[in-house]
Amino acid sequence: MKKLISVVVSCYNESEVLPIFYKEIDEVSKKMRYVEFEFLFVDDGSKDKTLSIIKDLSKSDSRVKYISFSRNFGKEAAMNAGLTYAKGDYVALMDADMQDPPKYLIDMYNFLQEDYDVVATRRVTRKGEPKIRSIFSRVWYKLIDKMSDTEMVDGARDFRMMKRAVVDAILSLNEYNRYSKGIFSFVGFKTKWISYENVKRAAGKTKWSFFGLCKYAIDGITSFSTTPLLLASFFGILFCFLALIAIIFVIIRTLIYGDPVGGWPSLVCIILLVSGVQLLCIGIIGRYLSKVYLETKKRPLYIVRETNQK
Image (cartoon, rainbow, N blue to C red; front, side, top):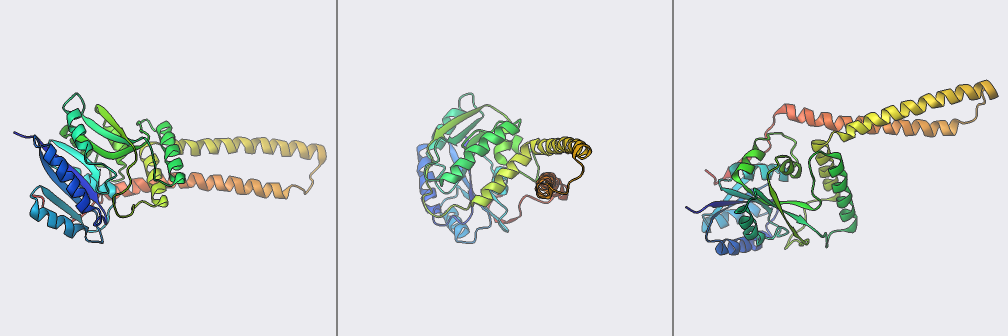
């Protein structure tokens, strides 16, 4: 009996690129006749014709399945839904924008026939991206890899193929605040990395703004590291120590030179500095508390409006 590969495709306003993507993935499936495929498209509350295009594809190709959310819940929720509904012995995660080249599915499957549980991809170049975004990305990967006990690979993408045991392990982590790159690394398993150069979108525009990427980066750090809390404690101890030295200095200066009125500008600067550090530390603590708050609500990661999955 042939093995089944479930290809989970997260979509948000991808009507321009979907026909291109389907044509490419269909060509790949024809080259892999030794396995069966299901193409599971997750419509993350798109506002364009994404869902109608997927429905048309499902009418002409029984392998095409879809899940449509009631609104936009984000890519993390879309990937989780895809993994939950996927029925395959192997499950591949990818985007529809063609920045995850479908041709690599062949190599991924072949590597999984060896002694690997996961085959993941990473970009070795960021050609085509704004330079400022590339710089921040590289710095962030180095930073989170140092701060977290979980390994973070520079340039790692969500594009990967996994055996069923890995998928089940990922789904067993039912946390609300999900950061998939960290979760993939956390569950472990033997991973083969495929490196390739950055590929531009085939059509349409990226849905990631610089602010959105910054927020995603902060979520990643707070999801897989408590180092920011340690830094907040360090700043608290440091400024207490500096304050103690300053008090001793003021007492000694007063005893020797009296109590001159001068020095208020420097005092204002010190107060502003210390206040800024305090607000930074409160913000760090607040970020962690907000995650605890969301976890305790037990809200669903997503709400399905319609699907043709059984």
